[in-house]
Amino acid sequence: MKTVDVGAALDEGQWGGLQKLLVFATALTIILDGLDNQLLPPAIPVLMKEWGQPRAAFGYVLTSGMVGMMLGGFIGGAVGDRLGRRVALLGSVIFFGLLTILVSFSTGVGMMMVLRFLSGLGLGGAMPNAAALSSEYVPRRQRPFAVTLTIVCIPLGGSLAGIVGGLVLPTLGWRALFLIGGIVPLVLGGVLLKILPESPRYLARMKERWPELRALMGRLGHAVPADAVFFDGREKAVAKASVAQLLVPEFRRDTLALCGSFFFCLLSVYMGTNWVPQMLTRGGFDVGTASWGLTAFNFGGVAGAIIGALVIMRVGSRVSMLTMAAGAVAGAIVMSVMSISPQASVLVFVMLAWTGGLINAVQTTMYALAAHVYPTPIRGTGVGTAVAFGRIGGVISPTLGVWALDTGGSARYFGIIAGTMTLALAALAAVGRHVPGASEVRTAQELRSLKSEV
Image 1 (cartoon, rainbow, N blue to C red):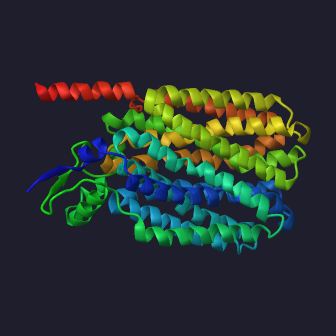
Image 2 (cartoon, one colour; image 1 turned 120 degrees about the vertical axis):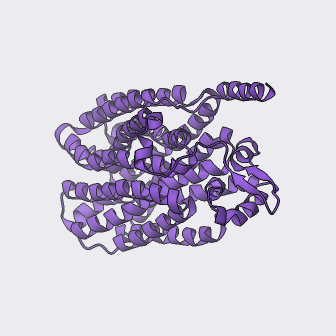
Image 3 (tube, rainbow, N blue to C red; image 1 turned 30 degrees about the vertical axis):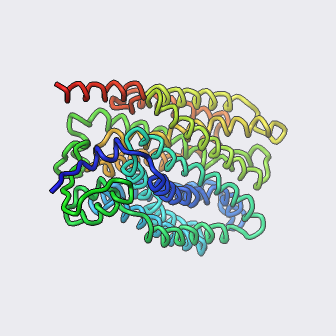
């Protein structure tokens, strides 16, 4: 009988082709999560005309979706720790796909509020489990990059929402937009049910599932005997996954700091994604062009997050994330004093890409930071709780965005974003367990080697 340390085998192993494929498959679910989450903002100008409702009415619809996502993040993370990341992730994808199809049959604001709340449960539940699953497939040194590549698909999906909205809304209408957004996740969920395996670190905790783990470890390039006994020596033992475990002295500071950073950053993100199209139409842009503004706000985040993740692997998350947050603050300040009009469209779109890009880059790399802070037994609960608390910022964002645009226009709108990103920067600075850089990892490995020799 051989004892196999699953954590050591994965952390010190190679990032092979299968692992990359599994991260890619997980990332696909988050592209569709980002797509479905941001289908409504481009459709709001059309719905206002069709239903004869003011902008504020759709603020309530956006808020109901944010409340659903807040609850979904908390519930989904806890379900992932208890029943498995794969079950929670794919269940969320199928659920929000079905509910998005139902949104296409809405006949009024009230019905849409209920359906967006329910779809938000699935949308919120997918992200913490995708972050946990990606982090648990790969070696430790690639963990920040793998998680960021997964979560960066939120703004990528948001960019896709802007593109699809720009193409579908003028020709097929808003109902077709939501119908397309619901069918695609159902198809992907059905495919992934067949090919996506469970987290090997999660399986190591479940003796009855060790045969499944043996087969998976073999596919990942780690040959293990049929009578192998598994454990994860790289993770701290936790009696039971619960929110209370996140507030023990060892994790309390980081939990509170992560909750604060998610709150202020997600408030900034959704101030942008919910109201950029409306902000642009108020400035004189047509509906199609305003939808492309949402794409610019999100698409910069894809490049920014990938570059940020690569930098994190070299210098650690503290320096890189604080620098990106400071850049976002600067971009928002510039936009608060510039003219938002079609005559300045090139500059407006460039600054939207810069500001939205850095805000999204900070937000996506925060998932990698949260996955690093918590051990496997409470990783889903930890990430889900931080994200769920952050969703309170999303709940506030529709009302705050309406108030800012109605009372102070783009100047107040971007001034608020500058303020919330400043507070996100301060919260990130308070996190103690930041992801170490390459030099810190080498030093730690050398110390472990010296101790083993002694």
